[in-house]
Image (cartoon, rainbow over the protein chains, first blue to last red):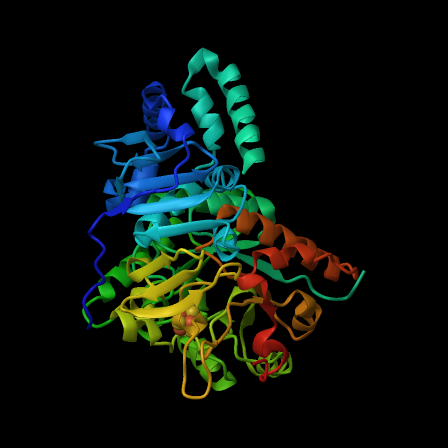
Length: 176
Length: 334
Ligand code: SF4
């Protein structure tokens, strides 16, 4: 039998052509919101982590084209993390998922088939394929949409937050 | 109204949410498997725990749909306990049928659970009346899932010579090897499609983009395709890769990325005596299941009513945006 293929080394994201907007983005303002969102989604869907198994300790870098920053997710129930990262940083990751913002959101909410997106080259995946397949399947087992979950993370502000998400989706979506 | 008997629509589910989606979209039955190597879709993050399957069976039964448990990989010596446990769990849950490929497991079900309905998996590769009738006589198999190697007239001849129902694949991923016999993944990765339940395990798949928006697909140590910018991609299986051979460079030596689509042959299959129509894709998303199951529900109902269905949407969900009728239409499709 051949050796199991190894992919333990994290890869490094580096974007030499990042635009000037991403340099001046005040990311510190976004971080607490992201923390709250990821904690809320984790509380609502504990079954996600069972499906992720060991892949929960991997770092998923999400590159939504048209967004001035990247998102780095580690879906570890004991050490949850969702942070915004500047495109000017060098970022170690295990999996990089890239695609248009709207495409990625529709995929997460199971409104469109990720295999079809992949066949069509609308999304690109590099790095630990096992981890991204596990994450895809875990997210696909969630009945609620991410936008709904995010909105409920903000309690009484649910209505305005939902409206803002829809607006952002429209604006970023139309640019990409 | 036509005189065709409406067949059972058998749909895939990799997660409880997919199962609910399939039932709600019009599946008559849903097939699924437990987590681990006991079924032929042993993918990360996919499949059911005993508790999840039990809840899912209740959901399906409440909506008059059935659930079939695929325990259809082959246990190697010393590993049979896990397969037996899966059978016991499925029976305990109240599953409508167990789908088995291994002859030892067929014997186990027949002896330990004689009242349990038993189906013979496509992985068993039983395509002749002699082989099928052997399983029927020895293990009381009620249905055979036919390998995708027979033409429709051949299916009719098999139907007339066997004592059980026929289930036939009508849509989804199609490899070119006879089912249960392919060792390509085993050769390259050391992991067996038929015994570990996974072709091209994700742990061994790598996609490497290049600066020109191309993509190299690797399985283990081997590059199996280089996709240039603008080209569509396929599953990372060896049988769908492109290779340089002595007489031709960079071509699909085995099979192109393509999906089986038998929508146009449905009336012929129904006339040939096929009881159940199976959709492939337990590894696919809820979005796929929703679209394909709804489209087939409409198509089957339309044909049964003597009408012509609209089947244009299905092509968007096919691999490489290409479809084939495979051996069902002709043995010389390639
Ligand atoms: S390599 Fe192709 S033919 Fe072989 S098991 Fe995988 S999909 Fe089937």
